[in-house]
Length: 584
View 1 (cartoon, rainbow, N blue to C red):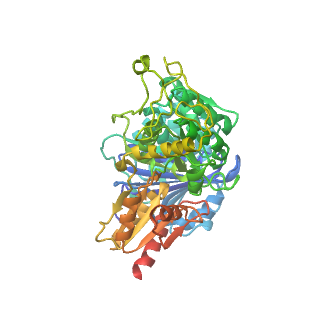
View 2: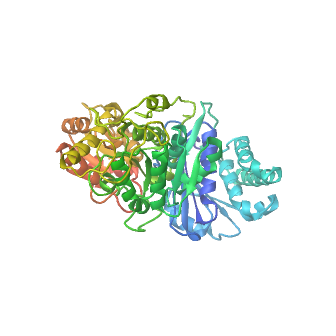
View 3: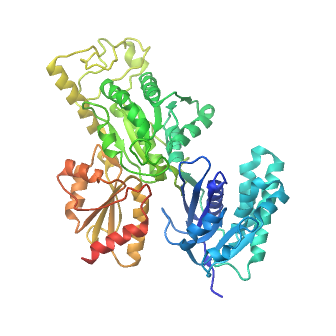
């Protein structure tokens, strides 16, 4: 008998939409997180309310991870199709858990080196309190074969269902116990994977949207206007669920045009304001974006990219909105574009976004994407970390008390003018979408036009270079055989590819770009010119970041690995691209 693999597992659950695939996947992941492991989870689903094939994938390990690597060890099949489609993805000795009353002949569908655990899931769920809990039985079965301490699962179910009352809690625990005991008893010998509790500091299992909301709340956001659009919708739901707790006004608007105009108005009135959308919704916001730019109104827009154009693939990921975000709306005005790479960066950059918006008095766009928005991973608990709020040149009541000749858009060396709020004494001024003079009154004077454009552009220089600098990972600059360049969520699979390459003796270094505008041109150019080989990774067909790097630095990256089928990069695929280059 082979020795069990301790605390390493890849898990997948599949079934039709509405069968609880995501719920079971999340619960599986959280059980392993509460066991002290590092966990990564992500989903895949078509844009169908009912039907369609959904999956949720989880990987757990003792060391930090940021993606799914390798074959799956456990597959929960809530329908026959899951076995047919995903059996080839399973490792030797992997277990398939399925409902024996609904799926017949499972052994004939899949390979013979697998373990088949056919359990009467629906029947056991009914005995526990209701067939609706069949997926809870399946969850218990997956924990049983790994010998995970049942108390961890019991405590988690108790916490989740406590609001439903003791009867519901008891029924779910009974359902999970039935599956746990059944799978444990059905094995002829111990399963190849065992989960043992590891004591560690408290962590969070959180996705990009959740982390962005947490950061926005921490940053003092007080107004949210949003029209729901996948994959950003959960930002609205989460904000609405915490509005009373944190004194936030949350408004579901009639459309994205209204949302953008509302946050502009709220920001003008002094509230830290935000909206969230996807590419289609952002298309409707660009007129208001330009108005925020010329009026120097600070607001934050979270744009979670999905495959376009138009409706495109509404539940799949892409990185094709970069150039759109950089140039949205007509004319020229500064905007900040941030592209965090993982949930922890979503939290940090959300806080930065609100501070920057008020520091330089301009709109800030935070580019997420479906993969980042809905992928969860363990991070250190960030809630206790002190956060400094910087409201820039926001005038106080005391400062305005004796102010004379207030000019909202007064010229200054750094381009940033003192900003007062409506109702402050001596602060009356005009705020419109027209070009203006220092007071805000409309001006069509050519020299004033030039001065105002130059003034607004200077503001971005106030953002610290240390904040916008790229991050580097992997091998050192001198030893690296290749430099991987990535931005946004490609960071996560790229980091995993570095580990695969290191295990093979290939020295790779990664440069991750978090700020597209302002752009850290000097640091990027220095890294590119020093690299032996360079490969850029992008989730679009036109290598939009490569074009932006060329525009800002004059350096053209010859080799690009692009993916635009709606799916995220796989670490193994990135590693293979690097191997090809390294061999030459």
